[in-house]
Length: 135
Image (cartoon, rainbow, N blue to C red; front, side, top):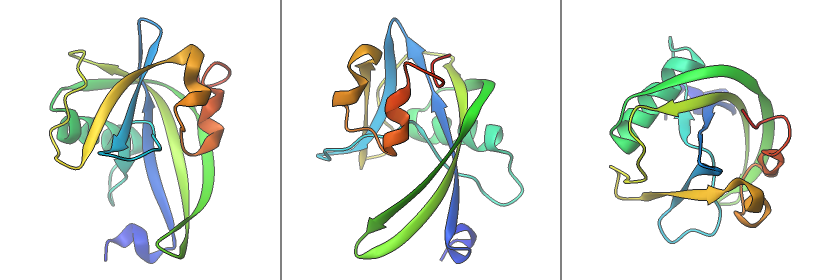
């Protein structure tokens, strides 16, 4: 069990990467919901460091973080268990524009920001990308 799971609250870094009116989203292959790229913050890492590391692992490209956009708290059920997470959200810029996943279980898609409500984005607070989360 990872340290972040022991606390009962996971801390996650997420990035809003917008290119030509589209936002980069991630989802499990065959899944119906999507989420912003990123992942768990490891012990001793900052949110920014975690986001850059996760992007490198999942997309295979370098990236930089921009301004801090906010915090989104979320609770959800997974396999019958309650979970909680705190999402630290940053602007994200990729060194190379791509959507090619390096991990077998996920896929990336560039989704029109104007149609974000149809992306089934979780947590649902992220559906407000046209507001406070838009860089």
